[in-house]
Length: 405
Ligand code: UDP
Image (cartoon, rainbow, N blue to C red; front, side):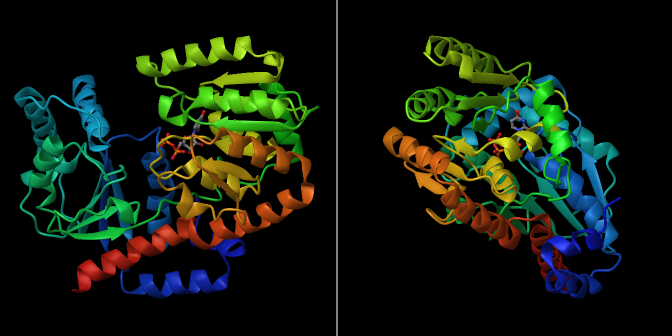
């Protein structure tokens, strides 16, 4: 089990000392996190690191997972899309299923903690089914900048019962919500299998296992096969880069079995890749097994990581690549500009400006000094702002505020 001390070499003594000082006033505080999945997705990954770390510093942290049927998750997936701006037919049946699932879960989920933190929309209505004897926080990981107005108005009814809402970017703060709001940037765990240092031997083993030759420089995008991640746009950029520099493209993506949209995007990508003159230099990796070590290896092997999103909540793939010192060329959308300072710790490009993507990628492929410069700054940028220790500090500050005010 990892403890805060394990992070000492990475973040330094000052960071640890400040965290220990803050936690002193929180010894034994009983904090409960609730989300709706143990596996898959950024929230689960973050809680997997954060909750044990909280316990290791002396809190009494707990994690519960809301149980729901596939119907329930279909409804909450529609909510998720509509919160990010999509349309929704908000029927009474959907609302009933949403609230009843929460009520059922509440009937066997006892809560007597000092602080409750509810993640994302799935367990949001739970608050309604308790005698609220402690502060409740709604930690929303979704892009709230332009939610569907019907849904927002409906969900607000539940959010109003919370003491604080926490979002991932300033642009997601809501003026029309009379609830205190804070911003916590997401973070990665430098010691998780996705991000820990790997030996050359392990990296080579994984590249071989996934049939990725190492005889040419690699550019890679690691993202769900989703139209908002624009994998077809990546192919077009690769076609043009490949005319100037001999290199390979790896498109790696995972996908839920039940995501029909994802499969059709993948089909189009396959077809388009097959049409390219350099098609033998395009490698698609779909739903990789032993995903974390492979992704870690690929992020370390690539010469350049591309993230050509049209929309992006935060973009953890960008943080992960930056931490590994691999230069990133990414769209200036969502949370990406919070991470990359253009020309210093990576490159930011307008999502539709293919010329600029090609130019920056070619430049990085040809210029090792530029890569070195970007790489150094990128690692430091993540060390200062986007590691799990900073996120732990944000949580501790919030609990202190809630329990002492
Ligand atoms: N990811 C993965 N395997 C893949 C593709 C993505 O493990 O084949 C991970 C990636 O490393 C990152 C997360 O999925 O941790 C994606 O998070 P991000 O914020 O970039 O995008 P989202 O999918 O949440 O829109």
